Length: 471
Image (cartoon, rainbow, N blue to C red):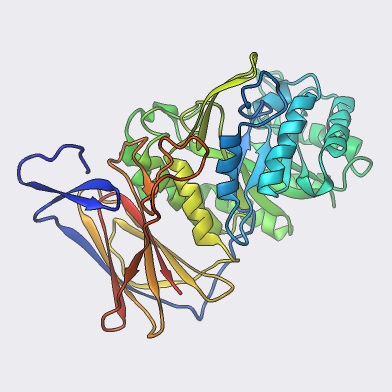
């Protein structure tokens, strides 16, 4: 691990503007790989990466009015939306949708328009199903279509986590079949009179294949996207962030989602995880808000993209631990104390950079150390990018990559003072710590690598990430 103070026998080495600790005799894991560019796989969808927010205000400008978004927050969204061929998806909804008795107020729509202006990405709007009030749902849809430009609306998701309604919104003996009837009835009330398609079910426990198949049967030609929710860990994991580095959690996620994704693909309908995160119930302090969560987020995102998922939206709520951007907002005074990008925000930036320009997965062949993970893509212009994750807590990782004679190799690092750090993160030598305007602080550090014997060598410190670009 990294430590802030060097004990005897250790050497502090400067890397860009940050300090990292290595032993004089630091062990290494070794990998040697080559890319099979002749067999590109799945394309990462343009709007794959996203955020999910409740029907609550975005952080305010601090002028005591509810209709403007804090400029720092807008800049942070602009940063994520700045990569060619990659749009940031927004899903607006959650428990607040099914608890609401009224259509969202004017201030929220004004704020949504400002966020759309900087992201230019269509939004999924989650509307109320639990109330069984078709008129409320129709008014919600009409208001959205009135207040937002058509290009800002990706669709309307009907209901939120209905598999958790027993004893809450519905009696204990309420069944999945009852849900299917209610969804079909609400769909009939709004399709095709108000919308040309609907989205659902916003299932809390992934997306079971049998739910997908039954929704297709009961709602022919009406569903444009299936959505489920997925949180990889329970809150009682406590402060054990090393769990976020283990591959087994992601493999379990793949096994859970695969049948539902396959059922959606068979029906020719898109499939999205509309709400997700490291741990549910707001995440866990010292777990969901750490650098470990950033590494998990990268691996989780690329794993599900390769599986065939069409997109995912990481839930962010105020100062909750799992929020990529924490905002301390007073919704009564319409003021904001702080807007803070967390380690997982850096992960989102790095994902967008890796996936830009219509990137497609390409196979990585060769020897890869057990604690090293490599995701490789090729974009529409032939540029190859390798996202390399060193998950080892103690050992550096050495990776040798075969390159072409004309390749220009550059490296950008994502590093942290420790596995559990919430601050001190640097991406390409830059940080958002202390940024007042949402722009990175510090000079961009991109390393130029020289090839030897048609290979380049990359060395990563323990628990760190690097993006190798071959242009």
